[in-house]
Length: 114
Image (cartoon, rainbow, N blue to C red):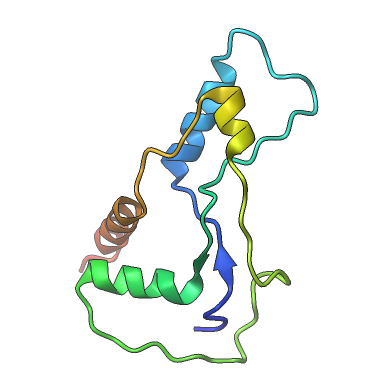
């Protein structure tokens, strides 16, 4: 892996879609220019996400760092704040990180079945 300490705020796409639906279903539209972070508010390192995925997959493996792999962002860590979305939409994450990993793994296994 490239940058094991790079941090990301990951939100399940189903939760993000729920937030969009919540915004569209409001009795009054949000004011023009309203910005809401649809995010978990939790930063996970690339290394911890890889370890979590290996655990869900039931695979024992070591991760090696390859410094030649480019970082997808110049930011060392990204973390959003979902408070405004919670207040404006009553939105909150429903899907746990572990469930997201299980679904992603199942999807990739299905796509790559032989």
